[in-house]
Image (cartoon, rainbow over all chains, first blue to last red):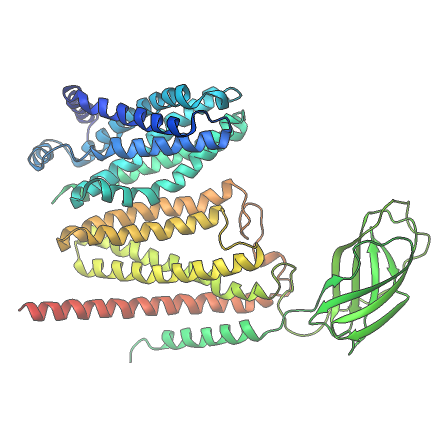
Length: 222
Length: 339
């Protein structure tokens, strides 16, 4: 595992995504249409808890949709080729990081679309800096956690259905912590209150990456 | 038969648990007073006790308000659980809330805290305090707590289920690590057997917990970090079984299941250990809410709880070895049939 190798793999992911622009488009479209469907149902949400919960649920489904393709888009042959070139730990670290960045961008985009359609009134009294930090950390956390789950589901050869079954139980506690943290930020609490949640979320993110790094080599070989 | 002694001790410990846990009486307690408010002057009320001996050994009864005592003028036991009490309530209570106390040599001291409300405050009562007995009662009993009452016995059944589940899940984790290190199919079978058995204990934990929650909190399920942790644990291991079911190749199945088990166990441990401490919880032992150590003053609960934990864990391990042996025999039978 070398940093140069990881940088190369990151670049590879980026180039693959640039080549398949529809992948990005499909992720963004998924989020926007989900939010639009919700908008048709509720129009404008004023209560903070409901607004907050709906946002995280939408983001969670967006993450499942975005991450499902992470290990499924490449053929077995190309995977084998990659295996001969790079160490599995570099591959999983690069992919986790790349997915994390993707989800960070996607979660901010979702927030913008969400605020546009469902209303931004609950954000008026919020500590915006903390709230945005929680959104980014949350999006990245989903990505970190679901990268390994996506690899497992792809390996089991059972696609998105299995990914949801494997992913939901382990993402649930993170989702609960995120809702709590962002609710606290939306209520205008400062770092002294929300700080412990944010630290806790960062710790989960870190441990998830460490676990993926440890376990992936066993998953990779056939 | 080698290794029979721990099976025997499991049986003995659980027999002890069931007998002591269900047979030991609760300590006496005052549970109800017929009045909610008192005012200066003569007050007649009926006090109801639980497991008390009012008739057999009529108690001294008094009121206590901010450290000042008012003894009853007369105490007329109706039966062992009911007595009519007359007080001459003086004016000048310093506190709105008054507790009702009783003491007898048989029952020891029993109290109904904040039993009465008095309107209007004074600067203390004029009369000197009366003297009362305070010798503790003899005998072995469980603490009698309001709300918990008789359900306190569930402690010996509900809590050890989760301990046993955790032990079995840890065995499954250990066997999963062995699968990854050695590629052993035997370890995979052991991991599966441990997960199966731990799910059995998890369901028992959920059922006993649900019944307990209904009796004390008034609902079959509450939104509580500890309960969410338990639900997540069950869902994770159900997902583990589904993952196994969807991979046909046994070696690949063993590896994928082991990876998911390790991943999920580590995250679950993190969540169930840390998350409840970040938030408030109704559940004892969390968020500043004490477990039983605070009110188990004479260690009567401990005397049954620790043997119960040991007994249930041994029984769980026993169930796991039996389940694993069945699985091994089945796979052997399959191999012979294939031949």
